[in-house]
Length: 140
Image 1 (spheres, rainbow, N blue to C red):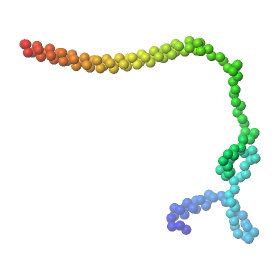
Image 2: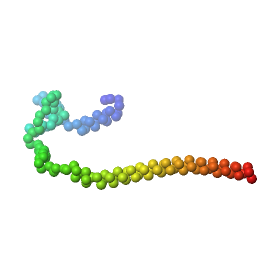
Image 3: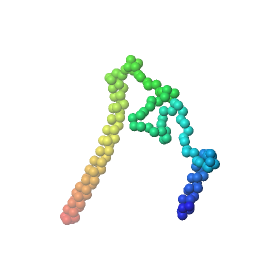
Image 4: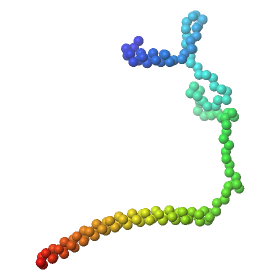
């Protein structure tokens, strides 16, 4: 027994859940049979954790697996696209999209420019008013 009770509890839990087949040997002693995974079906192609796979060995999938058909478009069956007709159809949509984006950008630029100009104008007007009031106070 170990001195740590936690390890004893873990060991007891592992023993409780361990699945081991026991067989009776001819001498009457109990032996535990090694755990062996169940055999795989003959058509299994995917290796499992117990299989040894050497580098470079790849088996083809068995024929029992469903194969998805590849869709191949025939060039004659594919619809032909006229670039001029496509441009005629896209032009109004693209023009409206570009116009809306430009209007929003111009509006934002004008708003920021006008705010800056109004601040500068306010400073200049206040200076002019102060100078004018100073002159009037000196004269009068």
